[in-house]
Structures are given as C-alpha cells and as structure tokens.
Amino acid sequence: MSENIVARSLRKVRSMVAASTPAQLSARQLQQLREQLKECAEAVGGEVSTRVRAARLGETYLRLNDAGRHAFLRVIALEFGPDATQVATAHAAYQHAIGTPAQWDAEAELRKAVRSARIRILTQFNALPQGVKFLVDLRADLLRYLEHDAELAALDRELEARLTAWFDVGFLELQRLTWNSSAALLEKLIEYEAVHEIRSWADLKNRLDSDRRLYAYFHPRMPLEPLIFVEVALTDRLADNVQALLDEHAPVFDVRHADTAIFYSISNTQAGLRGVSFGNFLLKRVIDDLQRDLPRLKTFATLSPLPGLAAWVKKNPGTLAEAGIELGQEALADGEWAKDKRQLRHLREPLQRLAGRYLMNAKQGNKPFDAVSRFHLGNGARIEQINWLADTSAKGFRQSYGLMVNYLYDPDDIENNVEAFASDGQVAASASVRRIGKR
Image (tube, rainbow, N blue to C red):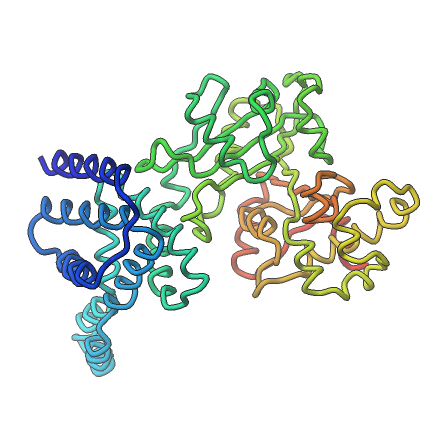
C-alpha cells in the first residue's frame, strides 16, 4: 500500500515539474521547508508518512530553480549537522568511561551524537522508488554549488560517503551490450561517451561489431541508468594508436585469432558520482567475463589517454627544459609540429621521457597526478608502454601532446598490485617505463 501511495506521489511530482515554472524559495517557504526537514530528520509518523514526506520534499526540490536548490541544500548543510553540545557531552562521558564496563555504552552514545540529522534526511530519500537516482542527481547539483560555497562541504562529504557505500562494485550488475540492445540504452552510450566521441550510428555499430565487446555496469536501484561503460577491442597485439583502433573502414578482425583484449574507453556516466570509488577490481569482472567467452585471450590492457599531462606541465613549466624540449607548451598543444619531420625526430624521445617522468613521479597528495593513472593503478594494472603519436586528434594534442599509454592487467598480479598501491602508493610499471622515467 505504501509503495502505491509513494509511486502516485512521484508520478505527480514528475508531471508538476514538467509543467512548472522554476521558482525560488520565499522566506515563508524556507520556514516551511525547515519544519518539513525537521519532521523528516525526527522520522515523525510511520513508514507511509515518512515516504510521502520524502516524496514531497523531492517535489519541492525538483520544482526549484538553481538559486532555490542552492538555498534548499544550504538549509540541510548548515542547520541539520550534529549538535555540538550533545557531542561534547557524549565525548566527555566516553573519556570518563574508558577502561570501565560502561565504555561500550558510552562509545555507542558518542557515535549516535556525532551522526548528523543530514544522514537521516538523505537516507529517507533513498527509500523512495527512484530515490537513489534522485540523490545522485542532487549531488551533481551540490558539486556545482560547492565550487563557490565551501559551507556545503560537510553535506557533500556525508552524501559522498553514503553513495560510496551504496555503489561499491560488489553491488553492481555487469551486462554486455550489443547492437540488439534497446535503442534507449544505445542512445545513452552515445550521450555519455566521455573518452572518444561516438560520431555516428555507423561509429557505434563498429564499436559493437564481432571483434568488439561493450559492457555496462548498473545499480539494482537504477536499472535503466548505466553507471559505467567499458569498451573493448579484440586484437592480436598491444594497440598503440586510437585512430587505427576506431577506424570504421578497417576490416573486422577474426576473433578466432584474438589473444589480446584492449580496453580503449571507460566512461563514468553520472556526474553526481564524481569522486565516488566503485571499489577495486572494477575491470577484473570484465576480464573474468571475457576469459569465459574467449579462453584464448592472454593479454588484457588499455589504450589510455594522459588527460592531466598538459595541465601538469602548465603547473611545472620547467619540466619541458628538464626533458630537453625547446618548444613551449602552446606550440606542443596545437600539434602543428607533428607535420614537420625534423620536429618529429627531435621530439620523440624527449616527449616520451616527459611522459615517463609524469607517470612515475607526478603526484597529487600521495597518489598519481593523473586521474586515469590513479584509476588503473588502483584497479591493479601496471604501466606497460608509452605510445608516440597515439592520438593525433585536437583533443589528444591538447591534453597530452599526442601521447597515450598502455596499462597492462595481468590476472596473476592484479590483487598484489591493488594491495601495494593502496597501502604504499606503489606504482607498478614495466622496466622500459621505469628506465624512461629515470632518464
């Protein structure tokens, strides 16, 4: 019964939002919102009341314009945190109880005091039929506002922690997509592709041909919304050029001779899950599926961009001279030098040396500076090979001067690499990449 009431409420929300004019919150509405949020935090009423109230709050939020949504989130962030007096009292009681039989009860009371009302509010949204998607989209808004409003940080940390718990890779469902998958799902693939733009339906069909595999991860509470797309090419070698890999007119490779799987595009689709770790071994499940389908496969690797290389050079301009590169960053990024045979000869080794130093030594905190490198090393790969002129698109030159990298997933080493990277920040790399990085 409660599910039917909530479902009807949500249908009403969608129709009202579609027909409504964006609105801001008046002073009276803000006060009403505070009262609703307080009831939500205190879980007033039974399960039906709780869900209907959460649906109405969702309705209010969805009907607001950007300024109104920002104000809505500020109320939750600033007025529903832990009670400082209760925390201090519980902490003092815990300190006093340490070493006595009352310690464990005092610990439970301290944990209860520290848990903010924000969590109780967010958890009630999660109980709605489309609540998980609502919270993911809400965090996408929150991340935008956070760029100019640091006071939202506490709410973001709590919501990120909730989403991280809900979206661990162990809870996700892996599905293989084909040309026969629903048109709606294939359209989302085109929309969400974040690494190599899908230019046409012919381009998409090429990525779904017999020598390709395409996987998507789904959350059980968001069955129609893919979270991650993983695109794979089946070959007989380590791919070193993305234009050749994506050539629609290239002959279809005979998968009977395939011994190598190349992960050439991994796209996260939900802006609200930015920074949320899906856990390690994300690609291990794809590898396991590929091995069951194609037991001849022995090599599993990526052909990956270095999206942070140019940004790192901009922050550290002396690195160009250290690598023996005379061209400035702007000249490197426009790619015109690639048309000059003399420049090609002179820049090949210095640019690869620059990339090697970047991959092995550039840090953000105690982790690699490059986001793609952090992802693959965290999932158990090793840096295998730096590829020269591997992406000659404008984006490829702008991000990384045309360079790409292969990360190798050796099934026998994945778990050890994950452990070493997580505990010590150890970067696994082939001997050739280590030599390049040390020159």
